Amino acid sequence: MIDNNLELEKPHNERERGYESPAFERHFSVKQVAELWGLSSEAIRRIFRGEPDVVEIRRNRSGTKRYYGTLRIPESAVERVHRKSSLVRVLTK
Image (tube, rainbow, N blue to C red; front, side, top):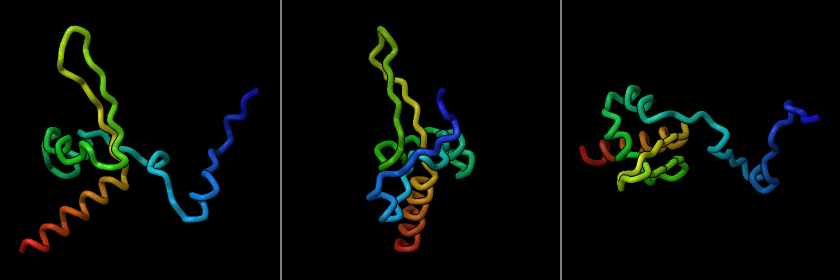
């Protein structure tokens, strides 16, 4: 019988450093971040593609060269990118 109440345990070295894995935090869709920030979905894809900790699931449609992908953006990445863009605005004023 499988115990569904088990909690995943972090590796020992991560617990010592206080590191929280982005895998266990809330993830947003591109559309959700676009609505929060008042930007287009395409702008959010450009901003977050290649950003650390962002999950990109890619697949090709058979018979086409175009790929289709889904991004899932952890809350820590949203906060980090927002902080970076706010800092750039302050430094360029």
